[in-house]
Image 1 (spheres, helix red, strand yellow):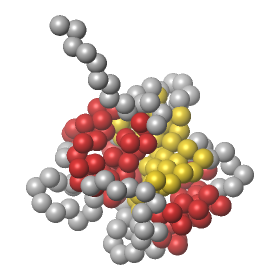
Image 2 (cartoon, rainbow, N blue to C red; image 1 turned 90 degrees about the horizontal axis):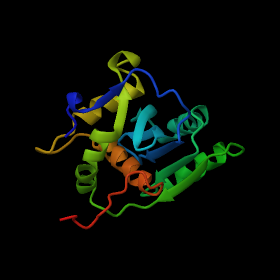
Image 3 (tube, rainbow, N blue to C red; image 1 turned 45 degrees about the vertical axis):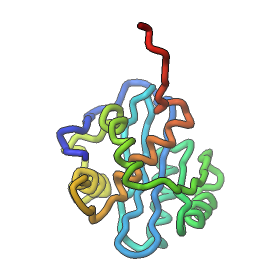
Amino acid sequence: LYPVESLMRFEKMPEREPDAIIAVCDTKDKGSDYCVLLVGQVYGKEVYIVDCVCDDGDIINIQPRLADILVRNKVQCCRFESNAAGGVIAENIKNMVKGYKIEIDKKYTTSNKETKIITNSPFVKNHFHFKANDMYASKSDYGEMMKWMSRYTLKGRNAHDDVPDAMAMLVQYLEIFNIARIEVFKRPF
């Protein structure tokens, strides 16, 4: 779904302040799932993925990292998926970032994950910008994120769909800011 060559890359950021700095977090419960938090700087309809957490470790150890990335990147709004343990984790992070201007909300997801990933992939390919290869180490969180994103396939089972799911979640979160909205209009002819 996301061959590396289909993704837009950046080496430097636009030379103005972003319109918004937002994040989404697809938490993990137990097992080999990844906890994925994406930080996007928004410029009009363009979204620059500037930082992330992509970690399959123990969620107790990951939580301080989630709070740190939100504070360090001056995130204004963050949405946590509240399925399973996500709601509790969101509350924990909210307590950890108290005193910072970070709005944290939760959303329970009932939609089919694969459908959500596929239907939101065109917006990701056309409006999301990812760091150039030489801007991150392959074993870093960003490197892990790019690895799992590019390995997602439509031709069978996926070992990990957490990163593409978080990308779709970010597209859906952008809709509340009127950024990723599709408008239907009457044909002019």
